[in-house]
Image (cartoon, rainbow, N blue to C red; front, side, top):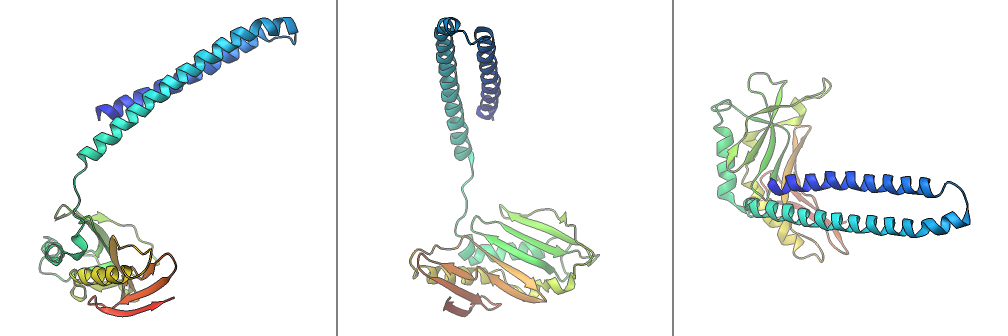
Length: 241
């Protein structure tokens, strides 16, 4: 934070000083170049060169200070950034723990949970999900799973024209551990395709009460493939486009 404050101070000073330099230069130009007189121009030329030289040195010094401040901020941010769990998408134990914690939230304990629209899983161990409200089915709340715990509900604004029921599916039909199988199958196929990369996230979309798992495409350097999964995470279809 100290480095960031220093950076902002330098940035402000840089802007003011640079503005001031431009004003000084303009003032001198207005003073020494009021008329197109060759003799005056010849006398003011050295003055203008001196001003340009001083301004250039000042700007170079400010650029060096800004570069140093940015480097300090970048180093501090990366040094204090917590390590991420990159195997979450294939860790069935961790995925099962997240689902159990969701079912045990006080507002949902002992009740059927309905996922609205989507649920997203990320390899850093986080999950984003939207759920229908337990008391009012016309309400939807979003939740975030991070650091092994679920956040408090965040109300979501929905249009009056949205058919919430058709975009919802019971959590009883979704198994979080299916993500592990989906990720494994996707990465196995990607490893066989030149230029393709393993996935860093997986998610489920609900439309007309039908679940669809993603990612559904694998892009290589020379080829593109479509991949589809069944609700339980098993492979449904894999073909080249």
